[in-house]
Image (cartoon, rainbow, N blue to C red):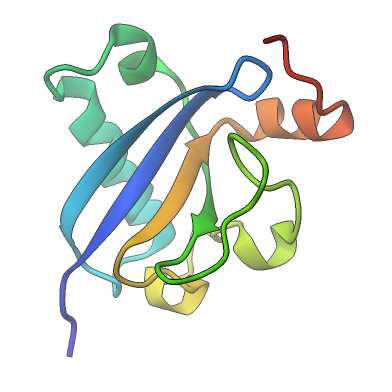
Length: 125
């Protein structure tokens, strides 16, 4: 049975400047694919009130699990750079199969930015 859950999506504009905005999504079906969920998030943030235009218009293309409810948190301020194989959501995978559960926090970012930052993880703050 598919029980809708709450997922927090951290919209990450810049890893170097720690520029991100958390957005809470309720009634999320874990049976949808990661690709479908990303499309829903993009559609929602395009018109969400109170979200600055730079966050609305950014070309997000990748999601990664940041934190599970009742789990250990990373020391990284924006997102952990570890376990990409396990934590990055695959487009055709259901959210449940990817490990998303109630009160999971996922990062939504541009993969090119992440790869660049991971190669040289320095902040400009």
